Amino acid sequence: MADEKKPEIKESPEYTIKFIPPNGGDVKKIHLSARNLKIGVASAAVGALLFVGAFSYSVYSTFAAQSGQSEIRELREVNTIQQEQLLQLSKKANDLQDEMEQLKQIENELRQMTGMAPAKDGNAPAEQNPDASGNGDGKHDGQGGPVVQPDLNNIGQVLTMVEQGLTQRRESLMDLQQHIKDRQEKLGYNPLMGSSTMPSIWPAHGVVTSPFGLRWNGSDFHPGIDIANDAGTPILAAADGVVTTAGWNDGGYGNMVDIDHGNGIMTRYGHAMQVVVTPGQYVRRGQVIAYMGSTGFSTGPHVHYEVRIGGEAVNPASYLH
Image (cartoon, rainbow, N blue to C red; front, top):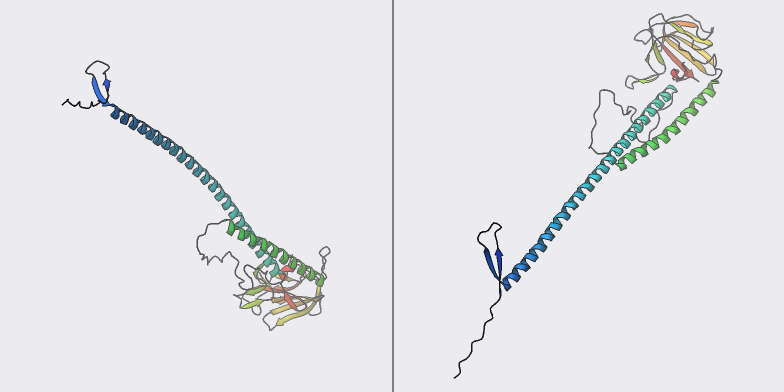
C-alpha cells in the first residue's frame, strides 16, 4: 500500500522590524506576521482618524466658544447702552411730571387769588383731597410699594399722563384767563388806563399774617387778608370812593371803615385803633382813613382788609400791586 502524502502547510510570511540605535548597540527586532501587521496598520489608521477628528472638534469648539463669548459681550454692551438710555428717558419723564405738578400749584395759587375753585385733575381730584400736593408737609413722608425697574411700558404710561395733564392745564388756564377777563369787564377795568376807583394799592405797610380763604385747619373762612404792623400804622384808602361806615362794629371787626367805590365795588378796613373819616365823606386813593389797632376779634395790631363785589367777598390779593 502506497504511502499517503501529508498536505503541505503554507507558512504565513513574517516581517521583521529592526530598531537600530544611532550610536551603535544591540539591534532590536520585532517579528510580525502579515496578519498582525495588517491589524496594526489598520489600528494606526483608525487612531490617526480619531485623533484628527478629536483635534478638529477641539479647535472648532474653542473658536465657537470664543465667538459666543464675543457675541455675549456685544449683547451685554448693547443692553447696557439701552438701559442707560432707558434710565435717561425715565428721568426726563419724571422731570416733566414734576414740572406739571408745579404748574398745577401755580395755577391753584392764581385761582385762589381770583376766588376760583382749585384746578381739577383727572389723575388726583383736588376736590377730593385738597392737601394732595405730592410734596408732603415736611412732617409726613411715608412712601412704599414694590421696587419696579422702569421699562418702556411704564415710562410710556407716565408720558401719556403728562400729555393728558398738558391738555388739562391748557383748558384750565384758558378757563382762568376767561374768568379774569370777565371780572375785569364787570369792574370796568382797563389794563392800559387803570381806574382811580379800582382798589389796587395796599391799605397799609406790614406783613400778611392771614390770607384769604380757609384757615385754622378749615374751621374758619377768612373773607379778607390780615396785614400786621405796629399799632398806629396808617391805614389808607385803596381807591377813590365814599365812606359808608366809620366807627364801631359789633360783628367782630371792632373800629371799621367801609368805602363804596361805585360799580358794586366796596372795601372794608377792620380792627382800627382810631378812625379819622366820617360817613358820607369822599376820600382819595392813598388817603389816611384810620390807624392800625387790635379792636374787636383780634390777637394783635393789624388791619383786616376786604374787597367785596356786589356784596360778595373776593380775594383782595388779586387787586393789589
